[in-house]
Image (cartoon, rainbow, N blue to C red; front, top):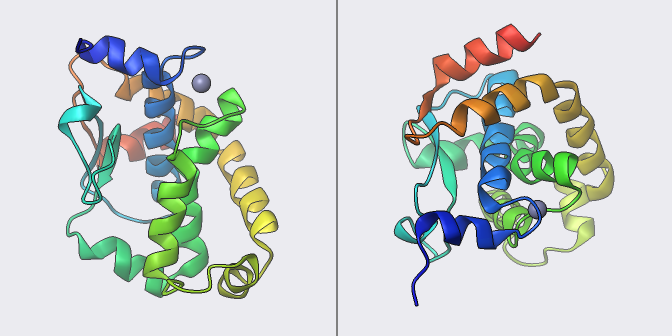
Length: 182
Ligand SMILES: [Zn+2]
């Protein structure tokens, strides 16, 4: 039996519905990017996550599209802390609202950062702390506090992403939402 896209989305979290998680997750990334001055093309939600597998075959519920695929790697190499804040903001936005994340939501994004940061081997809390200049727990707490200060913008962006036609929001549109929420 195959589920409709809406039923599939709903099944990802029986309490909140997967789509509620996805719009917050992508809004977290997008608003943090705008706050940190990280330019992107657009941010969108997948109509059906099963149509949209990532390189590693994971389902993707949406994403922030950069101008070029190398942009994230360059960003991580240039700014370890800012890119960390950008990449964990998705899971932190879900956690802030619902006190839990969808499966893999945090781990997938953190692993992307780790891999680009060159922490392929020896991914212990100690090597992460060296790269971040502080313990992982503190870096997460700081990113969470920063995102919390942006929560009106995250809420507005999540609401806009939850539109009926799954239309992407451009960087300029997210900038406007962040500005209006100030
Ligand atoms: Zn949930």
